[in-house]
Length: 523
Image (cartoon, rainbow, N blue to C red; front, side, top):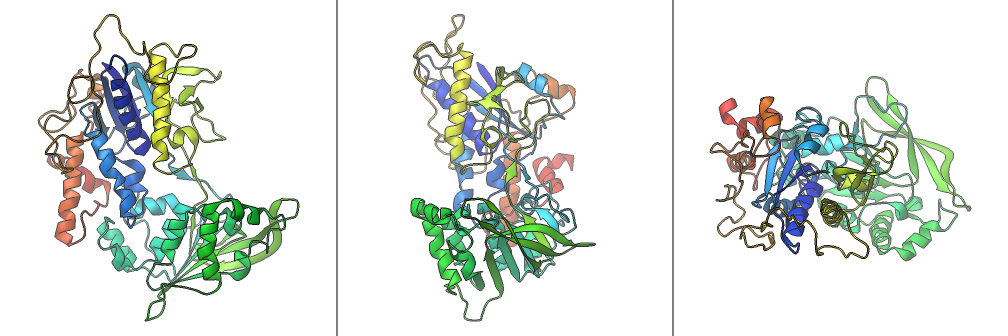
């Protein structure tokens, strides 16, 4: 039995768990693997649950795929266990044959300007976590009493935030937004949202699909300044034009941006516009104004000169805003005891192998996802990224690849001469698990029969020594949250949606509600 811990139950962590099960089963002599997916929260799915906008149901449906990974007989959810507090890195590494760190990127980059810490100035991640019901952010954190909001950034997260702020709250009724958050949107005083980019439209990071969604918002007028949409107005180098010629995504974005600059707003409502969404380019924030709270934002015009140098022009304007949300990139945070590159904000690694201070791989430690490569790519990018890390992990456990060896499967990998190879997968015949659930599970909220080995009759992870961390956590009085207990939370959210007449589920809005649903006997 190969025991592997994956720290983080978001897409990167669960894709890594899936890759471990499938690759181990595909070996010439299939190896059986037990994967414990450890998360500090009692809820799985990470960014899919707490980072995807509630009105993006097609993206949120990825959770159904990740659910199948958690319901593999070889994968075990271990929630409510915090690395660095409940268990140390040394304890984790010594308890398992290998550990994969996959905790993502959990904080926004700072702007580094005066006034950034004023009340009313927030990280976009905090706002996203709020409307997604993250237990770390109280439902009372945001009151939306600002009439004008500035969103700094022109990536997909910035556009999500701007869209949610401008959208008619009635359209969020059928989503999983927590009820107190929905009520805050109904009481919102926001009437104008400004999305601001330091460079021009050719450099914006949002996708064309996300941009076009803005035009579909009923009652929202989308405005772009004509000069800022002109590729040559503030770029004397020709780089913007070259990007538009070479990049299909940029050309698609420019179609919408040009229409808005010409005053074309397809979503005009017959009763007029309730809100305005202003998309600005070639402006950088230099100071957030205010004394007791945010009252405005000073912006400097930027440009690219003929030599390709980007910088400020010395031309300033002041934007009236009572709330500022920064969305200029994400950063991973260090894990206690785990090597970390402060400059790049990643765990130093070579193809997923964690590197020590001397640049050599550390035995048994691996990394996947944004913690490995930085906040790049889409959710699906984590699948190939995780597969790469797992290939290296399995090669290392077999003594490393030999000269001329091909990628998995290859002869000799993980063959143990002192014990027979065990078949992986639910069939027990050496076949790889194909990701499909056993007959009768149907994606329902009940724990399928035969799944979740290691759970006792009450659904708690057994505290006995029959799993690697059992003794350590039992000695500290810590009972991890099992997959069965997570299903209690899920069922409570489904029941709440029914009682409120709202969609398929409504997220529980705070930590107390989540834990009460998870373990009602402790309430």
